[in-house]
Image (tube, rainbow, N blue to C red; front, side):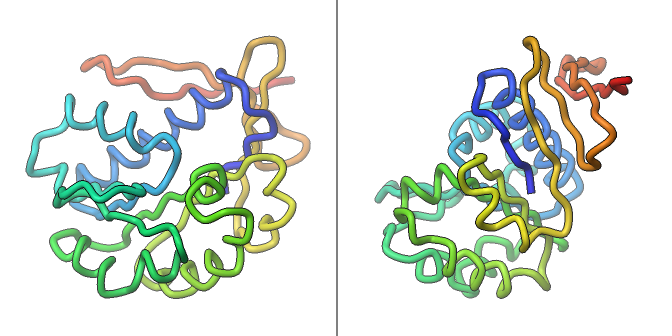
Amino acid sequence: MFHRKDNSNVVNDVVNLVKNNLIKNAISVGRGVIDATSSSYETSRILVNVMDPETMKHYITAEKSKRANSFVINLEGKSIVEDFPNDVIDFFMSSSSRPNLYFFSTDFLMFTYGPDFFGDLVNLINGIRPTGATIIIADDEYYGKISHYSNLAIHFKEVSGYALMNSAPRISYAAIPEYDKSHWPDIKLFDIV
C-alpha cells in the first residue's frame, strides 16, 4: 500500500514516479499491469512516448467511459467485482507473463464507485491475489479503513517542500528525482538522520 499522508503536489509527484517506475519495469519484461488509479491517464501518456508499442500491450488502464480501445477496461461504475471479473482480467492479461501488477487508488475508486467500495475491493483482491501483486494508493482518510489488509505500507508525506518516504516508524528517506542515461526519472533515497 502507498499511503499518501497528505495530498500535496510534491507527494503526488513522488507517488506517481514510484508507480510509473514499477509499471515501466514490469511491462519491460512482459509482465501484465492493470492501472485503475486517478493518474492512469498521465501514466499511459508518458509510457506511450517512451515504450515501444509491443511492450505497451502489457499495460491496461481502466476508466469510466464507453471508449472503444483494446488497452482500456471500460467501467460501468456499479460494482468493482462486476467491472473486473476474472475472465476480463484473464483476457486483458493473456499475452503477459505473471506475476501481474494491479494498481488501484482510493480517490479513483471513490469517484467511480462511491464511498462503499471497500467490501468489493477486498473481494476483488482475494480473487486476483494468486495472479500477482496489488498496490493500493490510499489517501489518509481511507488508509485507516483498509491498512489492516496490507502486507506492507510505504508512507509518503511532505516536509518543508521535500517528499519523505518510510515503511518503518524510525527510518525516513528523502525522495529526490534522479534521471538515468535516457532521461527517464527514477527515485534516489537519502536517509534522514
